[in-house]
Image 1 (cartoon, helix red, strand yellow):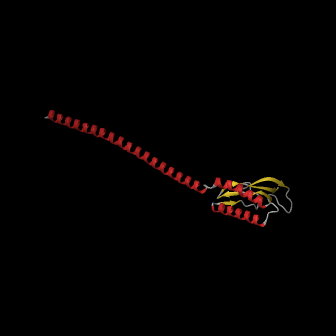
Image 2: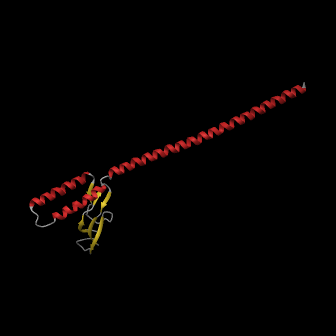
Image 3: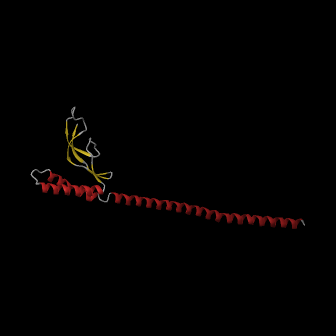
Length: 171
């Protein structure tokens, strides 16, 4: 009996050992699959986040293009507006011609304003919006960084400068 008991004990140990080997072998592919699933999930989350970033950037870019769509046209129209201002400054214009030029200028200014183009303010000198083409000495009546004369008006489209105002500054 002792041989039979030993054989049975050995057989049980062999069966238990083989079950453990099977469990180890089964857990190894499961662990690999779980790791693979986690890796793929991370890749998916990164790709999803990247797609959201691309969509956000594309939306922002479309908004910028829409906001500044009239920039090039406005720059070209400003040249015509300058010519109208020069024509209005000429002496000897008849009232009818002057009235026609003013109406044309006003309609151009209104159209530019509707597109978001505004004249740059010229209260005091700001290097971000003004270009000093000449300086004059400052005195008691004219403190430094005040504008003496405007040679050419400056314009901006929303918050973007189209062209700086060309000014004479007391310095």
